[in-house]
Image (cartoon, rainbow, N blue to C red):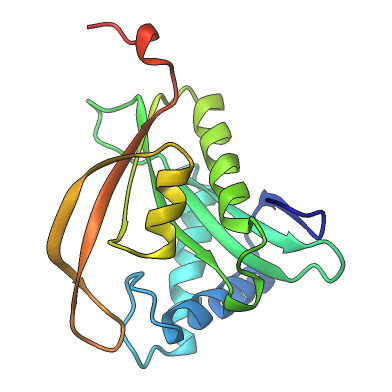
Length: 183
């Protein structure tokens, strides 16, 4: 279920966007999300990460979407569609770093970010998307609910931000009906 209090747009490649995205990531990591960073995570590290991601988007290697509060303009969440794949996989893209600030969860933001990512991939003639997420997480349940297919679980794949191993679940989604796929 969504509401009209936010909208989805492509991220702007500027320092204010990097700052806002760093705030979302810091909130997620401090809340225990295993998204590539360990605690304590420095603000400088997060700004460097997001500056590099936004530069990659400017080079056309990915799209970064943000969910923005309609009233304040505050960035509430983000997701990336990564185009950079091997040359024998021009038909697919990766979904990466889906994050929603803890204060904005349960409003349909994650689902709308994912729908925007899927639409952009389809517009770019990508027919297959892949991603991984922490097994049993809210994101795991969201992807299943939105029609993503579970491939399997890899135990002890990554670390929680505070330490300790966690498993990841690998998902894929075909963006064309299976009857349209040639053998």
